[in-house]
Image (cartoon, rainbow, N blue to C red; front, side, top):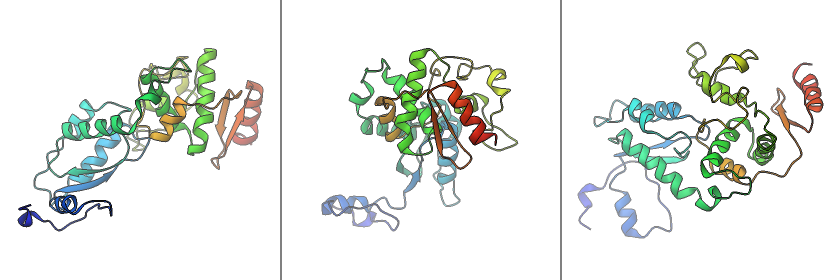
Length: 255
């Protein structure tokens, strides 16, 4: 193949299924790329910070990534969470294109086009982004999705704290993009993303959902529940009526 002078020392991701030619080609870019893992539930500003941190190291003399440009170009909700092999000299535009291409590759179009709950593909992604922040486990996601769909059908405000956090933005004191939400915030945070003030889905995603969340949003559980909460230990408690929900609040949050 004429690539003997291009073989690199470094880390490689190889598979027993790879033919020798592909393995040889993989060995030519070991020190030119960096493995970066973007977990589910990050907003684009968090992704940008993590990518910058992983690429901006002393030995990288070809650093080209612009965090602000990434935030400007990225599509919230469509920057797919995964582990990526990113070139050390990758630009923000190239990274955005790679993350969006991965979304298109891994998210089955037929799932997004399922209209049984009258949700558009964009609304399924929005709902999935809420599940990614609200659910503690993958097992909870279909049920929480069912509850939120029930509330949408009833015209009831979703009352998702994560949407208020998203609207509040970065908390410099706590150094987090997901600040604590107070009861006062429910009314004082004036934003279309505040699902306490607006009885509908927010206008866009609030995080980058993974496949489990997207699948749950497209196929929510058929449930009679209308409410849920997590107790301090992280266990979820469901309720059908406001009276039952208030009882759960008293028993699990205020005792």
